[in-house]
Image (cartoon, rainbow, N blue to C red; front, side):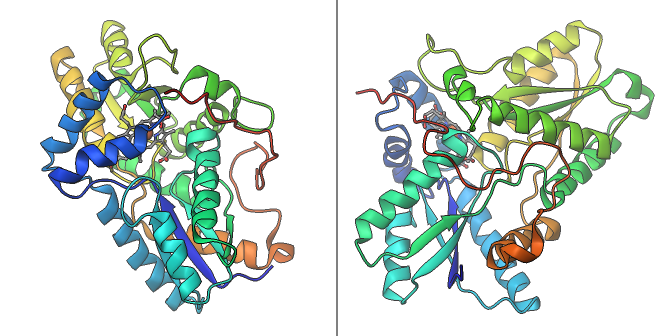
Length: 343
Ligand SMILES: CC1=C(CCC(=O)O)c2cc3nc(cc4[nH]c(cc5[nH]c(cc1n2)c(C)c5CCC(=O)O)c(CCC(=O)O)c4C)C(CCC(=O)O)=C3C
Ligand SMILES: [Fe+2]
């Protein structure tokens, strides 16, 4: 298969105070998120002047990727479209069609499997192509990259650097805390061809990052940013409850590493740097938050490698990955079904 372009597909975020509510309406349409939760999240965005950092982070990633493609002689135009806010994916796919693009690879800013992280982006691509019509380009999603060295190594370096800022005299009571976005337990159960894959991939990434960054520190994988109605079970424990349990257990210091994400977007800078940091302070825990890949050159090169892997599939498989879970390249039809939509 030959491809004529790459499209970065991401979540999107508001960039002005008046964008916050329409953005949240796009995110939560039909998803049964209670109005109280929405009001609370709107406030998190307004705390930053209504500007989510995620769009600028994607602009920075596009610039770095363009430079990396050029330096490596990869001559493919790069587009960008979001699920929930401008530039909206359907507009981008229309522009690709207008530019004469007939086939493209999509790089999605999530490393993992599951409905929200993978299948929903495929639905977004299908919906955008349907909106553009019969002459929309074919768009194939690039595989998940949870155990790719270009994702694991930047996270590991960030953990190493963060841990080095803590008091070495407290090393024996220091804990590594990996976080990812919580999802409904029903969604977790049906993630991947045999279920449970979102969690399994995260456990593998946590193991790889911990082994590379701080093999002497015990670690846990916990969850952040739960949404939805309170009666629906989501993955637990929440990071804040976990910090409380650690403090009660004699832990003095924590390194929090958001391995669930590729950049320091709002759920990182609010839910961790504000909420979890406050929890730690209240508990008297030393707290440091490790960074995310962002525009780390290894992460940027990884994207190029994943693109070239698809341009020359015969040459490069088996694909590089540090873990032992199977590479999951194309999704069977019944994998990661959408949650039941709510009115
Ligand atoms: C697995 C996962 C990822 C990681 C994979 C990926 O990166 O895609 C992720 C990322 C993100 N989630 C984000 C923001 C939000 N997520 C929400 C709501 C939800 N997230 C869910 C899951 C995930 N979310 C789910 C199951 C819901 C319930 C409603 C629904 O089923 O859709 C809501 C609604 C309000 C609320 O929080 O209740 C908001 C505002 C932002 C943007 C941050 C910024 O602006 O910088 C990003 C990157
Ligand atoms: Fe989310």
